[in-house]
Length: 92
Image (cartoon, rainbow, N blue to C red; front, side, top):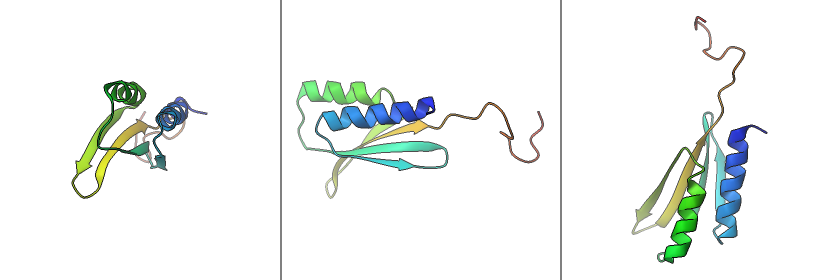
């Protein structure tokens, strides 16, 4: 399993252990993890959430009055080190 897969699995597991339901979505260049957060969290839970998303390449919180609060995190896929990395026309 690539290193990025381990980070996604670890991130989703840590958020699940905190009691959040996670959604993992595969995209061509990254994998995203999302979790709905309640309106109020203790300071301790916030620290644990921030420790968990520190595994990600990017993260944020989307808060709206209609949909509540969604925590999101993105882990980039690892770039292959051999093969046709640049695609056609890429000169090495």
